[in-house]
Length: 247
Ligand SMILES: N[C@@H](CCC(=O)N[C@@H](CS)C(=O)NCC(=O)O)C(=O)O
Image (cartoon, rainbow, N blue to C red; front, top):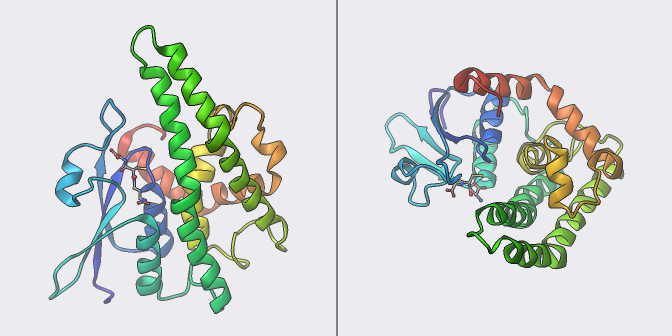
């Protein structure tokens, strides 16, 4: 790690990569942003496969003097590596081993548990709109059955769990300790981008009975706090300016 290292972020619209842009902004890193637009099928464009074989975003490259560039994928892994190696002034680093362990837990929980239920529900929604002529009713019946049996209760269980984690803290502004950490960064995509930014969709995804603001007041307070953070505001402004539209 050196202060001359440079970063390239391969950023895909409406994706998990937005939080890596927020990470870079928060840490004040020297980065180049490469923007990719989704196809009409809402997939990543093929060019991303030239960067990493899985063709997903986020992917980052770290350009280091005298060494091969380092290619990193997986949001949790990227956050962990970048904070460990480049957060030299402890902006996101925790102050105790217990807090560090909790951040690591959230880095895994978010992608390994929570995001899977959300992706399944979002894909189910898309499936209903893409059903071949005459099969819409059947597709809706099948996806709704699977959702209500499995994905919706699991999503709600995860949200209740996160709500209770915040409720038992002295501050509901951050998930770990009393400051911003990688836990807040990774959770921003499922909680803010997928859910709180679109309450109507969130209600449909969770089976129609959920009112996020009413049922999850601590997650709501946390969301409001993140939305006001200067680094988060700046991150959205950067993209608005580049794309000429809101995400
Ligand atoms: N677990 C990975 C997931 C990466 C991922 O699935 N990214 C999505 C965007 S949210 C993607 O690139 N989708 C485009 C596609 O699969 O075509 C991570 O956390 O980085």
